[in-house]
Amino acid sequence: MKHFYIFLAFLIAFLGTISAQTSPIMVCNPAGTICEPYYNFNLDTAITYANNGDYIYLSGGNYVISDTIKKEIHIYGTGIVTDSTIYIGGVTTINSNIVFSPLSSNSSVTGVITNTITLESPSNSLNFDLTRSKLNGLYINTLGGNIYIAQNIITSGIRGNSVFNANVLIANNIIPQGGITSTTSAFGCYNQPWYNTGAGIGYLNGATIKNNVIFPTSTTNFGYTYTECGYNSDCGGYYLFIIVCYTEITNCLLKNNIFRSTNGMTGVYSSNNVFTNNLITPTGYFGFQPNITFSGASSQSFNKVDSTVNHTFNSLLNCDNGNQVGMAYQFKLELKPTSLGHNAGDDGTDVGIFGGTLPWKAGAVPSNPHIYYKLINGSTDVNGNLPINIKIRGEN
Image (cartoon, rainbow, N blue to C red; front, side, top):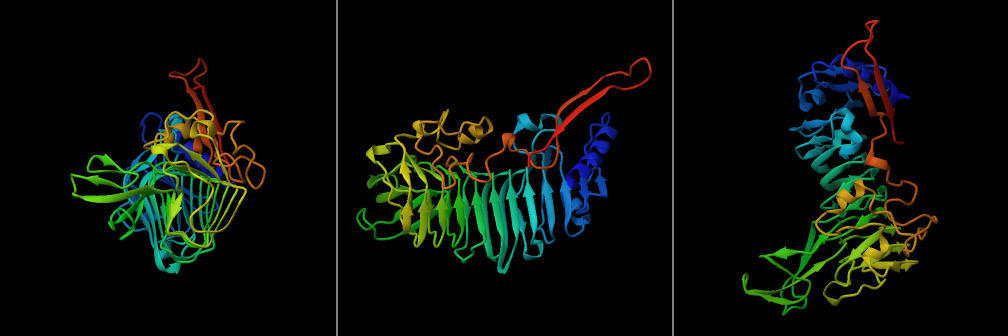
């Protein structure tokens, strides 16, 4: 009901600015009973004026956050899919990195496109929710807290700080590239460093990681791509580059995920993790074929390897370089009925983003009501009335 009241306030402001084509930033109290529109104010100003616990509603457009957030606020954008936001100004983009301090505990972000989000609270616990957003990366640098990460596209992955936290839930996200790296020396390749890169998750301790799709991409260095030992004349040395789905995770539960394996390995440098009901989608890249032995597993059960990545998904066009971001918009990451991941989750639903208790929502629309159809006549009728037809919907 709170979101409906806020939507009515926003709709009144929207109708009042049809001719001016200026959409306000709406700052609303937690109950949604008092909303203040801010015209010609930037997002920094709206955050400054907001009280602790307020909700900030953004229309489509481009915004910037310059300062570290030091209060509890809830930022709602229009969503990350153009087709689902066309009638409300398009997608909401925050063209900056967003940093939340210890004073911002219990904050949330939903329905925005942004660069990176950092939870910077290494000496304190911090509660935080991130849903239905698209960002380059997420860094969880906290001492503890309840952290809920669901239904997002996180291009370069999710990195923790290795501090134990049993209340981190990472569910139904798409990690299409991964950019988390780790390095060890004197490991094969003529005692040269072994570089692990492209990992979608890393340095997490005690997290629950379920129903995600994690597809690391191949690594290019000096114009060359390596997945095994080889001499690079450009940099004058031997290197081993391994593309992995995860690195440096400990005491985590990983279930109902889909991992893409390009070189026979899904992860490295990990320990004491439980793997159950996961699916590996091999590519046969450079002759490697994966198996269902997960690195760093204390136990593993009911995991499967599908025949090929194209056998897994209903209509996968290209798995590399983050192209599945667009495919998520078009629901191209649904499983084929013939995939071994179909109904193979621990709850009987599909593995991946469309299964589990938090399945991917159509259009990745936030929970606040959205205008999905509008018709505003260009002139009044014979009685002087202006016909307006607006339809709204929201996704729980």
